Length: 120
Image (cartoon, rainbow, N blue to C red):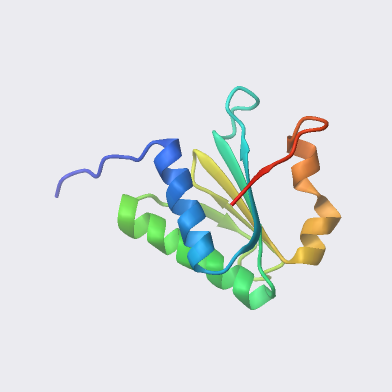
């Protein structure tokens, strides 16, 4: 078996955004973290309408990344479905129920003052 080439962070980001769009994620925001932190190159924040949708989107995303890139992701929060964190290494993905997202306001924490997030 040959080793699968690891995708670059831009390719990984594009696949994550497509996966979320395919699964009807709402209010998808991408934040460029390059040069700001060592945790990853990008952060993606998205919402699902219910705990079931949030958990399902997270599960499908993790499965797709494993199938397509051979990349295992660390996942937290999938069982409750309020806020799921998926750490792919280069891209950190947060999928929230809208009320939980509003409470934590991660976009405000990571975007510079006055900046607007790039939405897809």
